[in-house]
Amino acid sequence: MESLVMILAFLVSMFVTSFPQVSPLKVCPKCGAMEVPLPLSTNNDCGDSSYKVYCNNGVLEFLSAEGVYYKILGIDPCTQKLIIATPRIRKDICYSSDLIVGGLRIDENSPFNISTRNTVMLLNCSENLLLSPLNCSSNSLCRLFEEKVHEGSACRNTLCCTFLKDASITSHRIRARVGGCTAYTSVVNMKPDEFPGFWNYGIELQWLPSSLY
Image 1 (tube, rainbow, N blue to C red):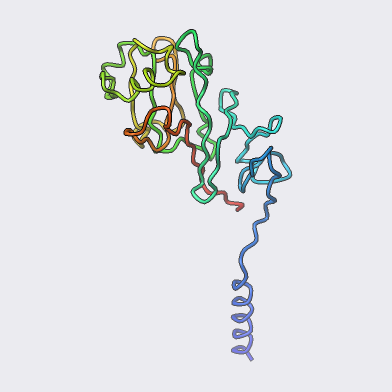
Image 2 (image 1 turned 90 degrees about the horizontal axis):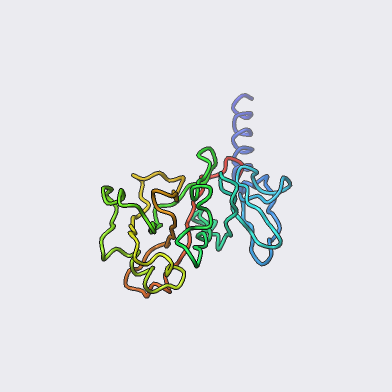
């Protein structure tokens, strides 16, 4: 009798595990033309609220720890990554639009961080940056951005530096400040041989897996 019970228990467990697990999360509705895949959440009724993004007037946006909204350009749920737009650079002076809050900062307690596929170009930098390990030479890729891309024209004839956002550098911020570098841009999966106007401008963020999905 005992062996029969064990066999039945085994068969029941096999039956249950043979079905795919269904996520308890509801997919959020589209924001404008953009899909909002799990676990991203635009409201408390869908997605995982730890993965908050915002649908503002049909535009999907990411909110930084400093309260600045960045437009989301694309999402790849398979690789758990999304790309946000870089801040605008003023036409009259080499200042990023998020300079007032010190650049991009992501809450370290959030599931998001900056991926290692971003080549960051710091613009209008102080000479203190020459002491850093960053590439601030005359052949740095940021020079091409200043010379070949209209948005970078306000930053010409200033010191600029380029670096790959790798694991040795904080993955939760890109700093902009007076006395340091007052503007920046970023390229995802940089292809140096391409014309700078065709580079994939943006900041790629990645997220940790959700425990609810």
